[in-house]
Image 1 (cartoon, rainbow, N blue to C red):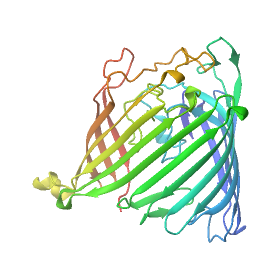
Image 2: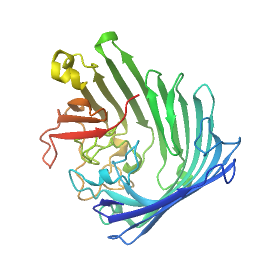
Image 3: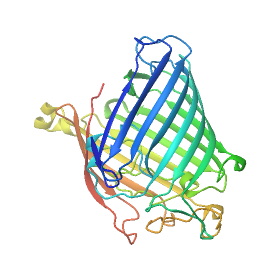
Length: 375
């Protein structure tokens, strides 16, 4: 059970099959219902593994073909990458967000993972997007549509030599971040099969850097470029985190859809001194508390070819949006925190360093927490 401004109280129930039923055929899915919008949502998938599994379909290494269909609400510019969006702790938000559409997505995905931690994923996608009262689909000529469809193919290459992780039934928790993780992907949707073309390249690199007795730095750098004239929904929208929890690869004080770019570089840096300062204070040393410092941000631009006011064939921005162009340098956030509280709790205080007086409501600082286990 969770809560949000569109669905009100949301109930969800799901399940999955294991290798006890079949060692090669697997299925999983869920159904959900919102008491406010009175709509049923669902996800269902069938997966065939090309080799036998011991317990479930996500076991490493994966070599499979998966067909899935999803109908659900989509929060534009607010996606949680490493947790279930129906987590009840994410229901408490610092602001109300109604930047939503509904979408019906059908995916056919081929995945090949090798034991050297190199993987290839290819996905054919049919995405039917439905307008809402908050995000209507209206172009610059005033033409309105209730929905439109995108057909795309996405190819992703991932290489993480030496990576170690804890495998659960639905996700993987990294055990060590010393190994570099390199991900390159490209999404292509031709004009002949889509309402708006997509030609988008994304790259990310992740690595933990050790400073001997002075702790370590976890660094993530991402870059993306949209080469086509595309709908703003397919451009680069930085990921806003509206919850009071710490969410990786997101921005704690950014508003959803505050910035939209077609070329962008972003970074997420977290420095852990391993008690370099707190160990000098007897009480804190005995409690084994740890300091944590973070600095994140992004910088990008939106070219004229993707400006709706200069290209009326594109979708116009929602009337209630506060989308801004990056005219004053990069967007940046910094935080200081205390980690390892009771061995599982981290508390950060976050500051917004730039675009602090944009002319619309924002949060300039705040407290964020995370429950986690370190290996």
